[in-house]
Length: 83
Image 1 (spheres, rainbow, N blue to C red):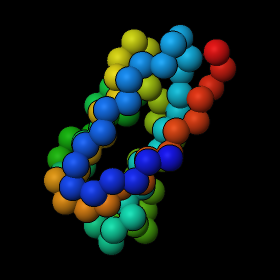
Image 2: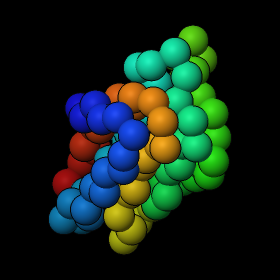
Image 3: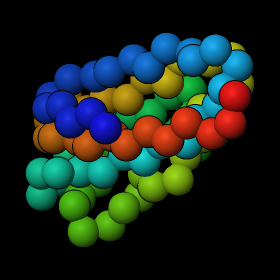
Image 4: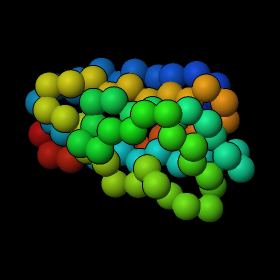
């Protein structure tokens, strides 16, 4: 799990494994949220802490995942699946 504010993180490819991840807003609202490299991408979204719009995403095979927001605090939870 990783929590961060007003920034972005890049999660590099992990061997041949795949992973599932979820993104939640810890602040009341997070603005201009983006998710790249996931099965479900997001660009310029506003998410809030009462509706888990970022739950249950998967890394696209062979891509890095990049998650961020301009303003707010996000919590990202990762689960490795298989080898």
